[in-house]
Length: 72
Image (cartoon, rainbow, N blue to C red; front, top):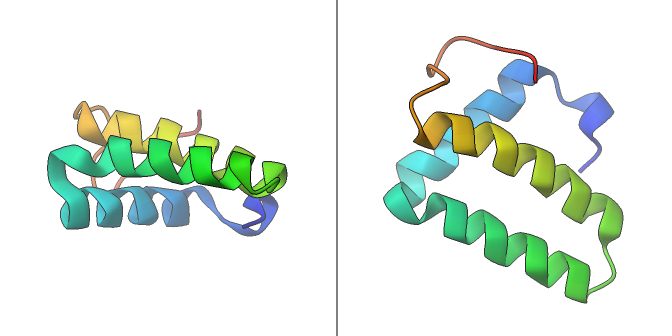
């Protein structure tokens, strides 16, 4: 995953999809994915997931609406 190819609205959509799929466990899923990627030596992809996790945290804390984009 290369962040420069993903516009902010796409990151927001992915974050909402994670929330819709995993509910209250969405942050744990992101954390587990980041850990697995780091363990596998996929640091660039892990960094992309860290950015996604930041957007997901905003979604989970009701700071980011489904159809509105903000820049972090």
